[in-house]
Image (cartoon, rainbow, N blue to C red):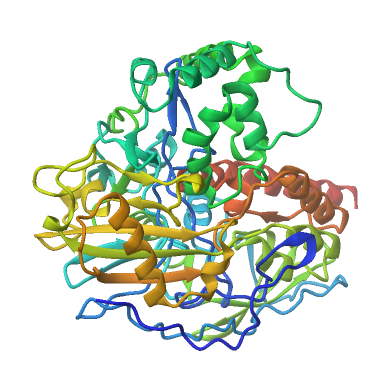
Length: 608
C-alpha cells in the first residue's frame, strides 16, 4: 500500500533564481508523462478544474473561474495498488526545440504552407482549431503534439477498477465548453456533479460547509457574528477606499470583507486554486471577475447588481440559450463519461488526422522575410518542414521562452519571469468503513459527500486540500465497490520543500492529515492509486502578472513576430473552462490576422 522511494535525480535541486523564483526552468516534474505539451520535452503545467467559490447578491464570485477541488498529476498504480515507477528519468531531457534563428530567411519553396500552426494539442489548441474549422472552413491549419496522444495536461487513467485524472479533475460547466462538446458530438457524455454537494473548509478542528447563499452566510457558523457584520458592511461600501496601486488578493479581500472572511474563505481558495500565496497573488489577474465589481459599482454589492444586469443584457442580445445544453444548477462542476480525456479526444476526432498530428516534435522555428514562420519537425515519417502565416504556442511560459529566445530575447526574458511552484498530488483509496460516522461530511455508510475540503494554512494541516473523487462523479464508477478514493494535494508556493519528500513520505503526510479530519483513529495506510510531484505546477498570477504578459507580447511585436501568438493557462487563466474560452477567442483573432495579411499581400501585388 505504500508508495516507493524517490526516483534518482541528476538534475539540479530547485534553488532561488531570478526574481526570487524557486524552481529553475531546467527542472522537470518528477514522474512526468512522456513528452510535453507541443514540444517533445515540455512538462505540462497542470491546469485547475473550475467552480464557483461563493455566492453573493445572487452572483457567483470566482477566482479566474477556477475550482480549488481540482487534481494535479500522479503515476499509474500497479496491480497491487502501489504507485508505479515512471518510465522516464526524473531529469529533464535536453529540449529538441533549437533556438530560433534571429536572422530573417526565405521560406523553403517546397514546404507545405498553412494559415496557422498550433503547437500543442491541449484544450486551448484544440478549441482554437475546432472553432476555426467550424467558422472558417477555408482556414488551413495543423495542430501538432509531441506526445502520442492529444489532451495536453488532461490525462485520464483507467486501471484495476480505478479511473483517475493525472491533470485537471473537472471544469466549470459554462456555455462555451458545453457548446463545444455538443458541437463535437459529446452531448451524451457530459457529466455534472450534484449541485447540492457541499465544499468544506477546516476551521478550529471542524469541517464547515461554505455558505451557498445569503441566508446560509448569515445564519451559518462559517463566520462569527463580528466577522459577518464586517463582511456585510464592507460589501455595501463601508470600508477603506481602494489604494492607488495594484492590490494583492489578501489586501483586496481584507479591505472589502475583513480579515476573518479572508482567512476562513479566501485564503484556502487561493491555496486550492493556485497553490499560491494570497499576499503575492494579484487581485486583478487572479480574481478579475470579483475585483472588477468594486470599480464597476463602487461596492461589491452594487457592482454585483450591475454585473448581473450586464449578463442579462448580453443574454438578450445573444438570444435564447442553446437548447442542446444541459441545465446547470447551483455551484456544480463537470466531467465526461470515462474521464476528461473524452473531451480532447472528441475534438481531435472531429478535426481528423489530416489536421491533428501526434508525435510531431518541433526541432526549429525560423522567421521568414515575409513575416511568416518556417517550422521544422521530427516526425515518425522523418523530417517535415512547413510554413505558416501564424504560429500559436500553447506550451508553458518557460518553454515558449526557449522557442523565441533568439528571435525575441526581450520576450523570452519576460516569459521566464512567470513562476510555477511545485505541487504533489496523492490519490489513494480507503475502505468505505474507514471514514468517521460523525461530522458534517460523513454519511451513515461511511462515505463522504460533497466536492471536498480545503485547509487554511493557519490550521496546522500540511495538505492543501482533498477531493472526494469517488463521490464527485459517482455514477461513472471510478473506484471499486467497497472503496472510497480521494485525491490529496500538497505543496505550493508556501511549501516548496515537498520536492525533497519521497513518495512514501508524501503518502504518510496526507494520511496523517486525513486522520485529523475524516478518518477513524487508527486507520492503516491506504492503497496508493498514484503519486506524482510536479516541480513546475501552476503558473502564479502574482502582482504584476498582467504587466509581464503585456511586456512579452510587446517584445514579440517589436521583434517582428506579430504572427507568433501566446496561449496556455498563464495567458488565459488556470481553469480548464477558461482555457477553452480563450481558445475560442483566439480563433477569431487568428482569422482576422490571416485575413489582414492576405489583404496586405493582395494590395502589394496590385501595386507592383
